[in-house]
Length: 398
Image (cartoon, rainbow, N blue to C red; front, side, top):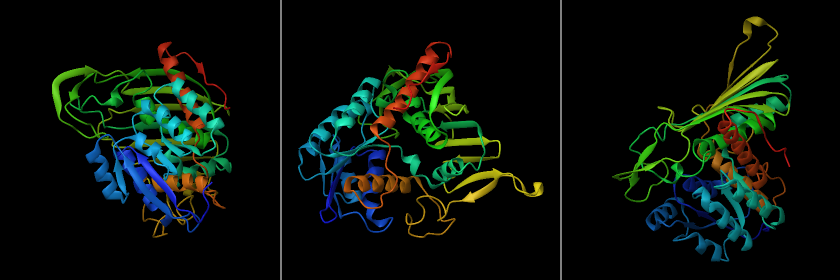
């Protein structure tokens, strides 16, 4: 572990929209939750698109841009690294970083295939460094607040979890055929955004033991080939030549939790007018709660008030009484908001708390093993879809 007197040197591999979110998080980690971390050196951002990497390094105050992930591995001054590139590259980069003695925060999903994910989870078991996965929504004050309600039994026995992640980034049929549209079933909307809502469901309501009724579908079967680099979900110049979309645009399924709770899930990347629609409702015999990422500074809560005249869903405004908010924003007052960028800062701080071994760390990040489990659930959903919606068991929690 890094001692408090030695600067902690960080790098980000990938300069796209998620990579920049990691970079911004590292820049801000020492502004939240008081003292505890050593000084953080913003060492490098690496991207094969050198101009993109240079722009990100300039924007977020990193010392330099590097042309390849290998250059990060070879730099002995770098302590901790975020991997934020195409899923198929996660395994080789993580293996090289761990072998070089560097701590790793990997974006979700863990890998491009279940085989690679299992290899990364096995790597974690013997690693002498911190390995973590970026399930950023675990850091949302609203979601963490709902989890607290559930764990304190304030909703009573749970009866239904209904989760969705509806996005519109793939609604334009002229959108370029980027790496996101390549890969086996389960690597499309289910792996990209579904992994988040599956993790949120287990984070709030406990482990899933089986899935059934799965359906996968693709609304836009062909897309134009890009003429250059594609950054994030951005538009890009395209050719007149088209290629096949290999994975799903939309997926739905039901789930059974270990507690007996029933869950329903739907995810899409072709949901018009929904830029970032992660949302869920959790119902119990004594209360209910609901969260919508489009309104991240609040959630709804309802329980059995003594007087029936006052019962009904109440708007809970995110404030210092919820996880992460106190000490996590400059103005600690309810109603000033919370954002996805804040979640990345809290995630980066939690990761570096682990790396530095601080005395009172934030709750630890998800592990490679946690992210492998999410991929096992996704593969169970794929198996259900291939077998006309048959029930498929999920491997038990390790």
